[in-house]
Length: 172
Image 1: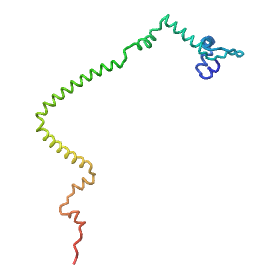
Image 2 (image 1 turned 90 degrees about the vertical axis):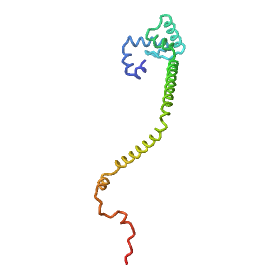
Image 3 (image 1 turned 120 degrees about the vertical axis):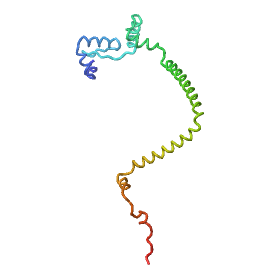
Image 4 (image 1 turned 135 degrees about the vertical axis):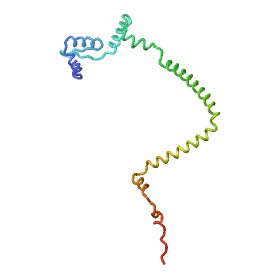
């Protein structure tokens, strides 16, 4: 018992109470072989005694019944219908709803296809215009402040930049 107390501070505090210590020793003696070593009792787990104790507890539970909380947890929950069957029912309902939605979608697609032939070309033109506009906007946004200011500068009367990189005419 002393070695049990050394492994846990809480157990050591509990074993200081004489009545509680006697009760623990009594229950350990029911499931363990005991040997007296001087003034101290030594305990060794006995599988046979432990099995007898567990069997006796089980028989008492059968005879007296178990508390309602334990019955709820261990009996009713174990006997409930498995969750998988509930999920299967829900998935069959979902599959039916999906197929119905798909049927409605295909019906509406057939209606729009009649009007959609001319619209495809117009939609392609609009998409191309929008893409070009987006490209120009991103190009403008990506320009630095200096480039924007240079674009505003008055360049009338100035030589073009490429003229500086042409070969100079041969002087005679």
